[in-house]
Length: 230
Image 1 (tube, helix red, strand yellow):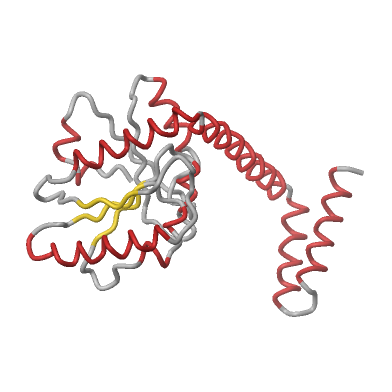
Image 2: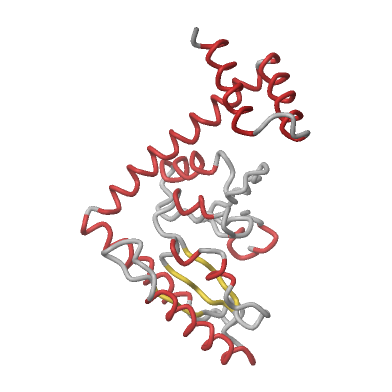
């Protein structure tokens, strides 16, 4: 998101750069160009790059394949304190941070923290080198922020020492190339008017139950083979 209207102090900081990036309809919560912008910021000398998603769910966790450390930010006392567990975020989260640990919400936060910690203990670790942590903070009272930063440093230190961080980044590059290749191929396909028309006809036939999805897929594959490879 990078919404400057919510970052009054940070937006005025000379050492910070904030760049909003539209999601462009991508379910992953991170736009197609987010990775390139991350690399650009690193090349410009920014050693800490934070990617804020439009909202995390089962389809939003592709951002975890773009960053070193994935943090799931939760709140307690909102009526459903297990959204992170329900949406499958536990498997990809390196840190879980429960915000709004202030006012009359301390008990709710403590209960939520216990639930998340219990859930983490029954899940298989994402990395052998790291046990995900559950932390609490209050953005309003500016408490717990230092602890979050220290946990991020501990995470990076653990993965760097084992060589895992380098492996993760290499795999991320491979994954990015694979995904971009798929999108580029699809863009070229649908730019072909004949394919686009045939594809729409196939969709309509499947919708009207005059063609099975499997048969439609086979026919589309044969069309592509004829158009591009024969």
